[in-house]
Image (cartoon, rainbow, N blue to C red; front, top):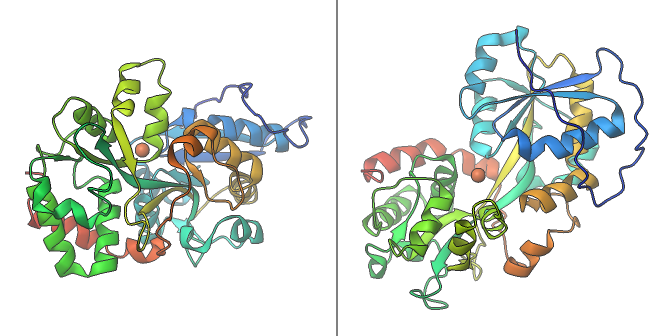
Length: 347
Ligand code: FE
């Protein structure tokens, strides 16, 4: 009934040696089923490496929407073992709907810093990403904007572009503003930012950088890895030009650091292949997979001492990340969503 997408053999892109590259024949039931909000091509290389190392097959169902609802509907009959997401909001929702179960693993605890995992082991971050400012090289001077708080300054009236205020990436940032400043100040800030928007929120993060290139606005909010995706985009070379038109600003370097989000994983409540699923979670937090995430996706590995991609090092260098616990920030997501409505952010 469920058409799991068969994964292609490992592409020749691993720069690190795969331990135990000799594949042992997989037994019939040795598999892990994954419901993924992350696009399949982003995770295939790591899953292939896992199969190569362990002989355990992986099956992926990818969807942009509806996977939590599907898990809920299927209940204990669900074939899914793991949920993969591209933001911590969806993980949080899964936990709140009791769709996950706790995992106790020394490997996961060692590989993943505390601020990027649930204290109860119900979700784990696998990669991190910064929500940064893309500013016009031509129209924004160095040092003119250096914090998220600056975005509410009336001097930027009509000069900022963002995607929908309801998107998980923005909800997470707004929730972190509530965490740091309290709801009242966060609301005033959000209203200030809304008043500075050049246009009604629309499009994805990359579309905001395009708008900067085209002169629609001077500052865009976007996740850090999109810079890597754009500047290397041989298929859509116009995106290289978008990326070349902006400077990258990591906000709040002088105080708490830049807001971070994660892509992550959770074990489903009724995982039929629990032991193998935990093996895969551990593998994804391990040295090889973390290295691949950095090289292929331009994300930041969560595992300490994993090298970042050269391209990211070249353009981004070291920066200070906000170390507030995402589990704490997550508690303000609903408030953040209500504030978006209250200030009419998307109108
Ligand atoms: Fe994204």
